[in-house]
Image (cartoon, rainbow, N blue to C red; front, side, top):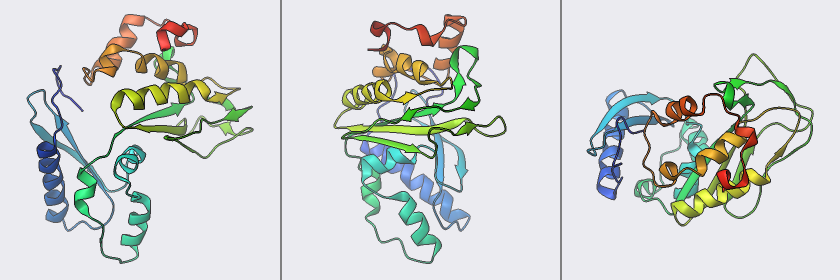
Length: 227
């Protein structure tokens, strides 16, 4: 997360090492054992600040798994049953390639991303090399009004950022889901923006996008606006 407008800093091996050391120190200071996630805010000057620690895996954990080759869920279970952490911890801070994750929600982006519950009719997730679809729903599932409206997470991997983004665009175009409104059109639009492709965005990016579009529907985008 970047707390002010870019140029965005590069998270190089030295910065990643420093963040990792700070996360370990925070966990040790409270005697924490198990899977957990420490979040930092990163300034345009490359300085990072502690934001919070979640005593669980994050929704974005497939990204980490794809670029490190480490099965975080497996290690969470193994540590919970008393095993010692025996993997190469340096592997966790030496990512291989790039990964992107998109959360597919049942919601209307042009209505401020409000939930859009309903019954899923057909559903076919994307597949192929470098594509991961984490989903627990299928045709006939009723998206409720009482809980989080996320229905799946699509993650893609490639040797570089541009390749991961291109593979994600292809995966979302392949995603077929009927009966409900989803955020997929908005995700495709964001993936096509130069600021996103170049990594030149900050935490105010989406608010600015929605204000500029003034309620214009993402579902009516042309092919040129999503490619």
